[in-house]
Length: 198
Image (tube, rainbow, N blue to C red; front, side):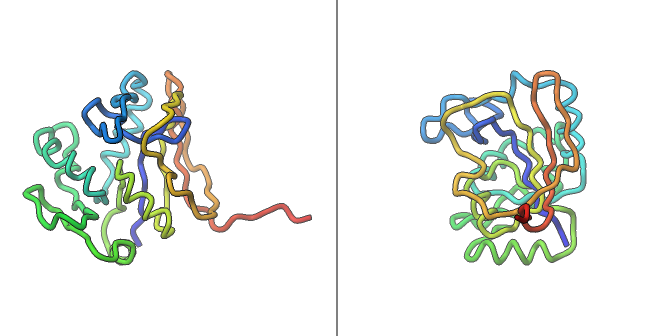
């Protein structure tokens, strides 16, 4: 079975919107695009590159796909895996793209993603894709959260757990602290929540 791994740059207050640049996603008047840049260092870069170079396919929301589609084909030297990976795109409006291989999913998205998880192939990496994330979390489809937590609060913006979560336990399988205070932590599912008995 394939795992769904959510990889996100996230602020202390849970914002995941536009860490990469001012024009990445200014929706709803978000004014802090590119907030992750000042915290870059070799430690975090090495951890990020390790994830980017592992075997994966991509599971993306349509908005993230629209941002990536014109960018990554022109920057294949920076991340060749983005171009060679199969890109599964949740969209009710798009059905095709010249950026291949791409598969567009519509209709019952959770059911279709659950079937993809049951198939063969590499793990499915989710970057950005705030709306799709809420669907994945609601339907208990996420296996791992690989988070880069930045020492910054943004006050507003798209949040990782915008629609809440289901009760679930996780275990930390890796953690790294960068020189600028960014914490990289890998949370893997660890079954049901247990409580201390009285």
